[in-house]
Structures are given as structure tokens and as C-alpha cells.
Length: 54
Image 1 (cartoon, rainbow, N blue to C red):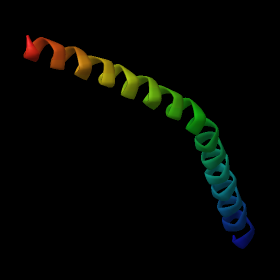
Image 2: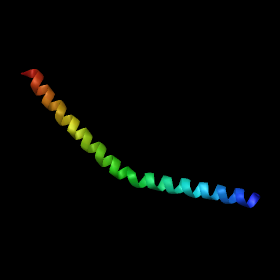
Image 3: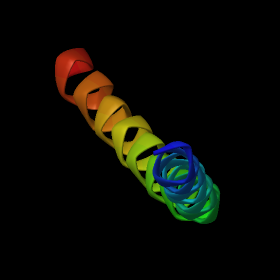
Image 4: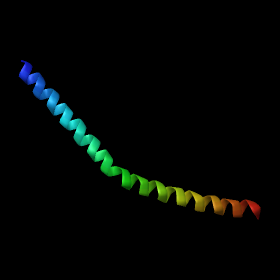
């Protein structure tokens, strides 16, 4: 019984570690997308300012 519990605990730990690693690898992609979004919003903001001034 104890062996089964240890194996399950080990499997959970490995799955957690794999998920954490996958998230770490996603960070640069997410940063890039966030930068694109931010620059797009800045551009939109500039256009809105032009429109409201005229």
C-alpha cells in the first residue's frame, strides 16, 4: 500500500515539474505577444488623440 502511495506522489511531483517547465518556456512568447498588444494600443491611442483634436 505504501509503495503505491509513493509512486502516485512521485507521478504527481513529476507532472507538476513538467507543467512548471512548460510554463517557463511559454514566458518569452507571452512577453512578445504582450509587447505587440501594447504597441498596438499605443498606436490606437495616438490615432484617437488625433481624431479628438480635429
